[in-house]
Image 1 (cartoon, rainbow, N blue to C red):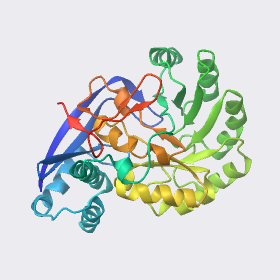
Image 2: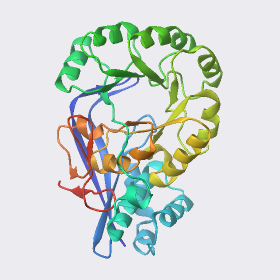
Image 3: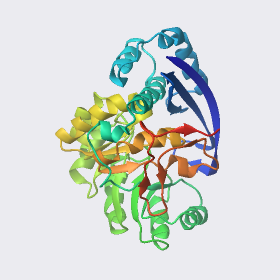
Image 4: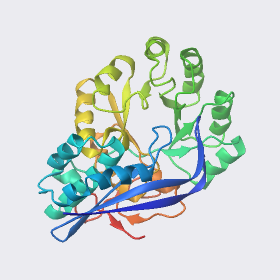
Length: 337
């Protein structure tokens, strides 16, 4: 098996701001795994919150590059086990695991959702994310991309007023993501006001480790709450079931599709709503997420929609939110840049 690594700097359509950061570009690592004439592609984006850069991921992968080239590839699961034993970060493992799954499906000439025994007849529609900005800019972004579900990033002093103003311009479902910016008291206070404005759920309102605060939120909030920063790896799912109504799984944070599939099963066993989210990936990463959609209650896979320019073809999101799955096996990805 041959491995290739390449860094891309993805330009965004708009400055993307959340409660703790803003950026105009997204650095990302694309991994290619080549075996028996087929190439699988995987991706992991850089993330300052988790202190991950493309350069750091490339450096740790290069340490085991010869071992990867010599690896006797049979299944993505066995490859993932090997990567975990090498103690790579979950972000680096994710890029490699996604590439291994794409490769595996291409070798079998089947899409991953078919290999997993699911079909794409029914699946949730992705939300479209509106980052923090002036109300005028946020309204302009909504009008630029009319969509049935918006995820609104909040974490300002005027959060409810922002949602109240945005509601004047659309009948779409709203989801709120405060990215750890609220207190328990703010969350409980804001929840009924936001519910009246057509908000479906709140995502990660409190700091990731504020479990005492989440006890109050679960007791008193009139809106369901979904864990994101509190749910990173497989072992977090069971704890989150005590403090949240659902979980948002990020492939980069948990280490790829292999653990994500287990987290989905565990979440459902525990009665949680299950969501998979993106980290502003290109179509490489989004196409991997798309393979999971038939298993999900909610999905946030608008990353490629936020880019000025994409670097790959694969699963495409139509204007009505439905998906077009390519006939190519695996995640169905091909690089174009």
